[in-house]
Length: 356
Image (cartoon, rainbow, N blue to C red; front, side, top):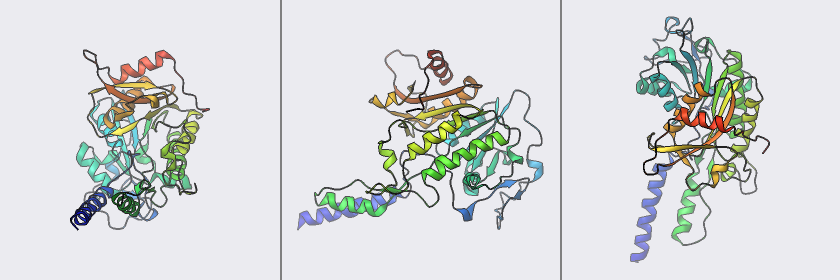
């Protein structure tokens, strides 16, 4: 009886913890930007390109006088950051905001995200655009006034899987009964599967960069693109292999589209993303998933953001792709800055093989 009570106690505790945790869980942070059709908006020149309903007080101050009518001062690069409110995108936006040589404009999915970004970065209203980028893939127009004169774009968007809670409960029950249990399942929110977000959505963003005259795109993707059997490709699929999955495969197709464009581009494939501070580990670059063989295959989000900002300068006018992870410093080792690391990589002449 005591054993059964103990098991019951642990079961209830575990289930409660999992449900609380899974409500905010996103596997490895692929960023976020897709949204339901009923909540999509564009704010530009003080008006919405589709009905907004009752706008919040903080947003009502946005008028045509707030929006830039001319490019930033000479020597300052105007950069669009898509997915600017995501867990990696906000680091990119913040670094650009702190750098006097850049003027960032953040694309976010909701007014709530816009408000958070304004508060956390001290950005002005003219620097935030609320827009559902996925609608571009469906042929809908975007008001471009707030994006005018941008010279570069950093794409930080991606599909975000969510855990299937009932699969967690089943997993815990079987584990408590000491039976064989399958790992918890993940799924995608409606309209936010990899094909729509990581392929069609990213193609639409590349086309947007062309349309507004931007000359450079930096894309945050993911390592593992040379491995069709990578675990990440199974997310969202049913046991029989059907369903919406293959996130790395769709990402790779979008990468090839960008590489084949006439844009200068840098494609960054980070390993597992961690919520850690930057400047504590040495960043390592390579190609073709060679770093997947390393014991340490992760990197902090701020370090990835620093690579993005460094690429805007060091990779301008080039087509570059690399994988990145970080490792602990050895005793007495100097910590190289991201620009130095990229320049060394370029000197080595390594090329990513997109035929794999």
